[in-house]
Amino acid sequence: MVRIALAPLLVGLILVGDRRASLIAAAVFIAGAATDRLDGYLARRFASATRTGAWLDPLADKLFTLSPVVALAAVRRFPLWAAAIFLVREAAVSLLRARLGARGHSMPATPLAKWKTATQMLAILLYILPLDPAADPLRLGVLAIAVALTLWSGAEYFVRRAPAP
Image (cartoon, rainbow, N blue to C red; front, side, top):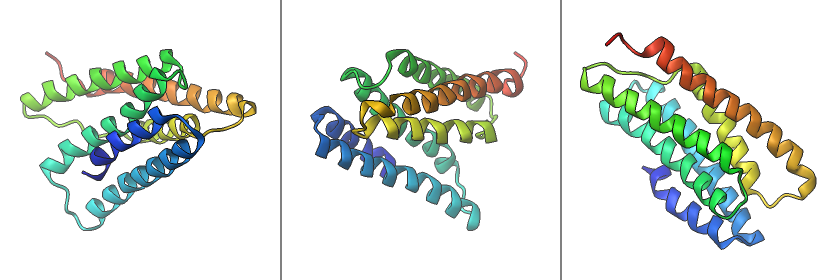
């Protein structure tokens, strides 16, 4: 719930666009990312995984990562092509999950998808931060890895996880 609540704040800070707001947005993003790790750890540690949590956690991840991507792309601080890849992959996997859920199947996150999320979050953070243009090659390199993992993990769900019609 924290990540869902932080998403609009994050978008607002990104849209303000000045250095101070960008630094605050980066801190909010780091805090939200930390809640993702903490939530997963606590659920495993205390065996408190629930059906609601299993549904809500991926939704929170999507809102928390895609909201700043859309905001950054809107203010031309994030490549539109990468934003489109992120959005299409998440929509496709969400539709697959919904289809499987309607049939009584679940589709937990794969280890590759967890790496995808981590690299996306790092890339997004690098684009939120008001870095010098000299950091652009680093940003683009991390983004390229995130895009590759986004495509690979999305394909993995459809190839390995989708049941026969």
